[in-house]
Image (cartoon, rainbow over all chains, first blue to last red; front, side, top):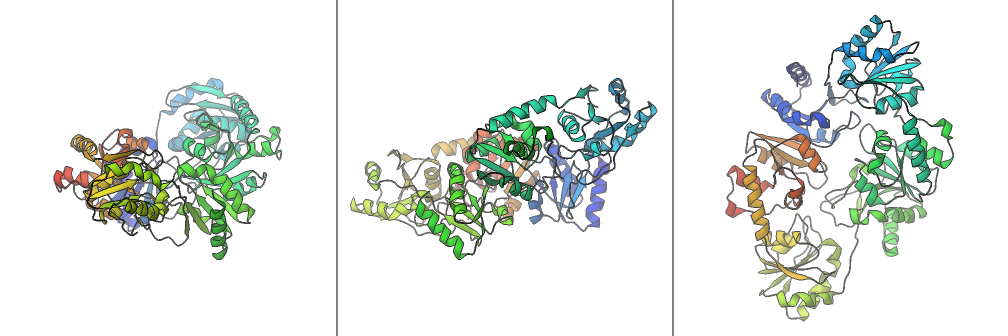
Amino acid sequence: MLSSDISDLVRQLRQRGVRKAALQFPAGLKRQAAKYAGALQAEGFEVIVSGDPCYGACDLALETLEHADVLVHIGHAPVDRQEKVIFVPYPVDFDVAVLEKVLPLLKGKTTGLVTTVQHARLIPAMEAFLKGRGIDVRVAGGSGRTPLRGQVLGCSFSAARETGADEILFVGTGVFHPIGIALAAKARVVALDPLTGIAQEVSADSLLRKRFAVIEKARGAKTFGIIVSTKSGQQRLELAHRLAALSPDTLIVTMKEVSPDELLNLGFGCYVNTACPRLSYDDQVRFHVPVLSPQEFEILCGTRTWDDYAIDEIP
Amino acid sequence: MLSSDISDLVRQLRQRGVRKAALQFPAGLKRQAAKYAGALQAEGFEVIVSGDPCYGACDLALETLEHADVLVHIGHAPVDRQEKVIFVPYPVDFDVAVLEKVLPLLKGKTTGLVTTVQHARLIPAMEAFLKGRGIDVRVAGGSGRTPLRGQVLGCSFSAARETGADEILFVGTGVFHPIGIALAAKARVVALDPLTGIAQEVSADSLLRKRFAVIEKARGAKTFGIIVSTKSGQQRLELAHRLAALSPDTLIVTMKEVSPDELLNLGFGCYVNTACPRLSYDDQVRFHVPVLSPQEFEILCGTRTWDDYAIDEIP
């Protein structure tokens, strides 16, 4: 917690006439709840903390607003308009000179630059660094679920696609975002982990092979649960109804947390996930039956060809 | 699923002019969701199913009412008034002659008879059987969270206490309810599992010893998270505020599911649980730090003596 964050937050709370504030943190920052709350209590605010799991700004603890004037959500940028929520960034900075490590891998005519929310404020510095090394770097403006310039989410890669570049540089951790970018932008993707300095070209081939196998396994299923999230920014009921209409053996199931235990309890032979897209791709090993993306279910039902495989994004 | 249940439910839905129904099942009955939904769809209703964990009528999937005209909750009796919820019982019957097994253990002048919701419709038959064997049996009327005659919940033992009997016969599975009854009614308790025929006298001593140890362990904690449930029938914010005021090192934390992972993420040295009381007593082994009941936290803070130890009930 930076003291500047707190004083800025206190100013915002006072401007809004807030007496009671609810705080929400993603898993990695939850440990700071007591310290953060203490700082606000010292300024005269009543504070409660949401203890539920939180994976993004799609997952707002709006139920706390029954007990608080405002929800302070830490660590994410908004994915939709929310009057009673204050979004407090939690930037993780690094020395942009680490981009030196990725230069040997860049081969595109143009290079689109994207990153995740915690590094988004370094976009201008990264852009300047790359330009200084002769890279024709492109950055898309913020829009929709990704309001920050150059920002991508695990469910929205438009900031990559919209650069129109033939190569995308993703700066951030993990391979899920770069794989999604490769599928969504149909571009070559290079990923740099700015904290370890490890740079690599990332391909979607391995994911595609695995997903092909999951779809084939799903052909044996007799019943399909179409999962609809009840989280604030993940509700796609219309999509779920459209998917449910593709087969007579479907039933719409609402869930907050999509957990292996509950999928087992419900006993469907296959699930189609319209909640957080990453659940299908990242968590399949945790599930005992296939959990398909909407596009994969369309392939299974024959309304989409494998050649039209697309990564699921929330519009 | 009994076909009589469905035809009665269909009648209720038609009477209310329902087009879209949401269904909710406890874990053990979730597997029936597809069959149940199919039967209602065949009658022309649109159906969605709640896939979230469900442990009781305190845990209503009211968020499904955003997408449905009514919530059909299967397997529990209501704990509070809910206009848009239809409660469908799921009785589990047995031959009341199994009560023969418990007769040698009954020694009271009067015997209070209690059971759980799934056996509640057998109360008159059990009462008649016991009377026929010369037992002076007492059954309390339904009230509050336990609307059925003779019904107890893990958070409400008033149907035992109100018999005024010096001995309580609990008919049902597990030892949690009889232990709770022993503490709440301060009576001798005999438990009969009607499915296995195993009868036993149940004492609270072992639970008390364990809870004493948990309170002692909690003395080492520097921070206390006061858990408030966001479930429909478990919200005790006022109690939480009263408990929070007992120590400066407390913070109120809202949670839907009280999970070990989230308690670990939050990092408090001890939690005080105002959600489902059973969580403290039954699930302590799953938690890495002490999770106290409200009464236990009062003992820790010195506002209650150990001699006044009481089991937590939701009024």
